[in-house]
Length: 414
Image (cartoon, rainbow, N blue to C red; front, top):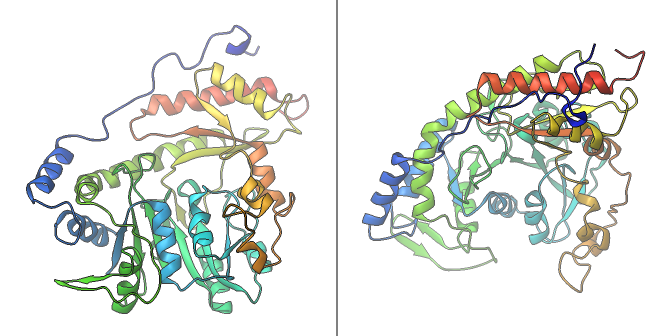
């Protein structure tokens, strides 16, 4: 006999608090103290941002990277360095944060949304290639929740059409695709250190320059700093094109130095827990855990699984309510709807009172252009994962999902 659901008055699966811990400690305080004692918090004169980048470069095996004020800024910097300009089209994922597309529009380029695969939730290479036009200049791939995209297929398409590839790695620290770190495969890799990512400096970001060419590094570095050329002790203010001020401060760099020491443990633990969840839910009728891309290693920024509502009684919202009642915090979907259904795209008004740059292209954003993405967001359940959780926490998450699923499965499917 099935145990009564907690939402109906039965016993709750999760009765103890989830494991917690401190993200910051004495190491960050020491680095901050040293930053303040420098007498400057400006990255060009101080040493902390430089040290942070050097440490990051060594970890990722890259020669050059540029610090930025946010992950959103990192993507904008990469687009600017790649030469994306007014009227260009840039293909990206419809399941992502708004930060992925802001830089595209700030360059007065037009976002184009390709559909996703229904099991990895990442860009579908077939849909991506179908979106390419003579205006297409770049692809921004999003390694959603730490699951790497199918980079072999995407890079083959990019090479075929001579497109730049920018990797949005905001959620994919120390994730691997066939032995290579995400963020080192495309032309640029963009990272975020805001307070909701694997490591935090409050806000901040980095751009890897994967060509390894000094000229590309110089262009990228300048684009993050108003197109000023700050190298060694010389500064050139001969400005030929507009660029934003996206500089990282010494305080952010200082915290980042200490945070990087924890990164391997954070990502390894999250991979262990995410893999436990996938294994614990595999084969469960009506429940589809994410598929990790072939050759991929994920660091699970969150855990998203799908429901087959044709096999289950009740709605996704009903399932979410029942799971929450069991003590497992969760919500439906990652974002409420694909990015292109946001009012900004429906009205084609990036800037108040004008349809520029949308009026430079025939791209449309009606409902149904990415059916898999729309279905994923409507049929999925998102749960958090933390490196501070315990194995027991993960086992109880699995038990709660299995308990709820057993009550929701329609007769004949179990």
